[in-house]
Image (cartoon, rainbow, N blue to C red; front, side, top):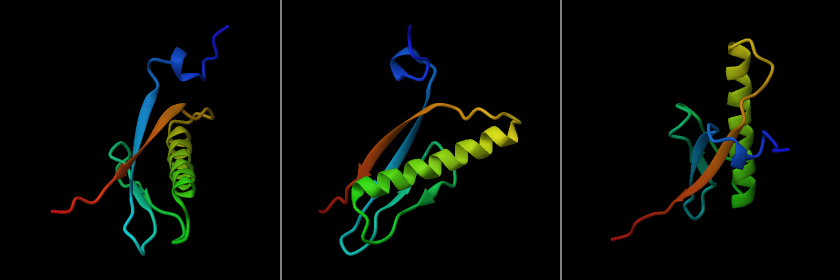
Length: 90
């Protein structure tokens, strides 16, 4: 029996893109073109994996708020895609 939470069986699953930024000497930060106003970042000494977890927690927080506003107890299943913005040097 297919798992309804598995993305292979859920063609309509919403994708949330998270763009991560990092400059040497500064912490990772992120934003999302799919969730207006979603910006943040972990502590300055956090690595990329920690930054991803931090971003996913922020997405979950937003989704919980959206579900609550709709009067629903079930949070929408989404696929989170992490992208890294690199500095372009001339």
